[in-house]
Structures are given as structure tokens and as C-alpha cells.
Image 1 (cartoon, helix red, strand yellow):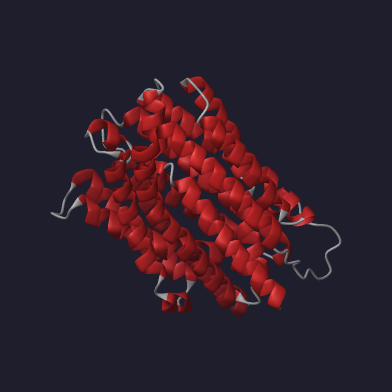
Image 2 (image 1 turned 90 degrees about the vertical axis):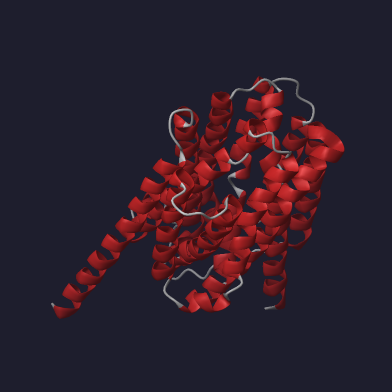
Length: 388
């Protein structure tokens, strides 16, 4: 039990530092790419291509995580990504940046499903799963609040290349922490001769609604994460000011995740409320129907995300057998990447004709409506089975 607690703590620490280090580049990457000669469309292609390789990596990772173990897929990608981030500091044109971004997208894909599977395997019941996901959300959110501010300051102190040297070195140190302190948690699997295949996990109808909702959630956030860095270029904001905007959203998420009593409510209820609220906020960003500031809107967006994300991962864990955690969270991460791909490509193509936040509003609301429909359909089906 003590080793398990230490291992869980180590996973939280690794997730915190990994999120901190990787999110440092949010206000850095787009202006760096533009400085290397990339246009807005090329930036969207780079982000989409890296998300595509990230998606492929997520799909490939799941079954191997279930069969081999979680720790190798946390440690090795951290070391490889550290080398690639240092490579960012050594390149000289946008094509080289594109190549490194694509490779790094694939490598990083193995980490998040392995961490989620490990945290879910540590839990003994759904309430512990919810608590683990909430604590994970707190750690990641705290990192996300600090990261953009740190990223903006690092650019001002060391310029773009020096910033990526710092990012690469920090990732290497995080890899050392994972190597020495993360512990495996073998799931208890009863009467299962062979691990489930990816198709078996994907074909589980219970989890289809979770994946669709995950896509709509990340489509909206992909739009937001694509649009915000362009404020640095289009409005003349500094990297530090853009970082502050990202941090406002992180503060909202932290406020939401700090309310641990929310875990007592149904994961479906939390997901539905948060998703509907998120859709309304995208409409606010697109049409400015209310006289509230941009920073406050991002703060509210963070509150909604803090409500939805841990509920979504808890919902998936509740609907998945323990022996399939790796595959299930691999698919979830792949769906997240698919949402990012679709959002960045769409935003890059339409941002000069209409607000990308309007499609984000439509997609997010479609997710909320589908969740309500699926909930009542499932409830009616269950009642029909009981009465038969």
C-alpha cells in the first residue's frame, strides 16, 4: 500500500512537471514559427499534423500499455521528447520545425494514456477514480496557470531558442523522476486469458457517447488554443501578455477542481452542465452578446473545463473493464487529438472570413444535446430490461 501511494504521488508529480514544461511553449510556438517564416495557414497545418501523429500514437499505445505495462510508456517518451525540444532550438527554417513537431507529436502520445491508465488502476472504486482524476486535474491545471506566464518570461529573458533549451532540459529531468519513482500498478483481471484488442475496446457501445463528447470538448479547446497565440501577432501583445490570457483560463479550472464535493454528483450530470456552459461561452466569444471582458470569459471557460474533464475521464473509467484501461484511455486521447486536428484546420481556413468560435459553439452544443439524448435513451432501455 505504501509503494502504491508513493507511485501515485510520483505520477502526479510527473504529470505536473510534464504539463508545466510542455505548456510553457503555448505562447512561444506560434510566434516562433512565424519568425521562421510560417504563415497562419502553415501554422495550422503544423498543429494539425502533430495532432494527427499524436492521434496515431494514442491508438497504437493503448493495447501495448495493457500488455507491457504503463511505466515504460511514461519514461521513454519523456527522454525522447527532451531531445526533440532541444532540437527546436537548433533549427533554422519552418520545414525543420514542422518535422520535429510531427515526430514529437507521435512520441508524446504514449504518456497521457499510460498515466490515466495507471491512476485508474490505483483506484479501488469509482469515487477513488473521481478523486484521482480531480487531483490529476488540479496538478495539471496548476501547471497550466504557471506555464504560460513562465513561457512568456523565458522568451523575454532567453529568446525563442534559449526557451526551447530550457524546455528540453526540464523534460529530461522529469524523465529521471519518472524512471526512479513511478511504480506499476497491476490491475486485477478475473477470468481473462488474453488482453482485449483495440477493436474490442472501440466496439464497446457503452463508451461511444464518452468519445463523441470528448471530441466536441476538444474541438472547442483546439479552436481556443489556436486563436489565442495569434493575439501576439495580430494585436501586438507580448508573449507575457498572451501567457496571462492562458493563465486566466487555468485559474478558472483550478477554482472548479478545488470543489471536491462536486465528485459526489453523477459524472454524466457534471459533463452535461459543463459542456452546455462551455458552448454558451464560445457563442459569447463569437458574438460578444454580453458586456463582459475577454479575460473574465476565459476564466469562466476554465471553470467549465474543470467541471467537464475529470467527469469525462471518470465516466470512461466507470464504463470500462480494468483490463482495458490502456486501450480505453488511448482511444480517448486519440479522440482528443482528432478534435484538435479538426479545430485547427477549420480555424486556419475560416478565420479570415468568420469567427472560428462560432463553429466551436455549434460543435460543443451538439455534444451537449447528444449527451442528453443518450442519457434518456439509456435510461429508457434500462427500465425496459428491468420490466421485462
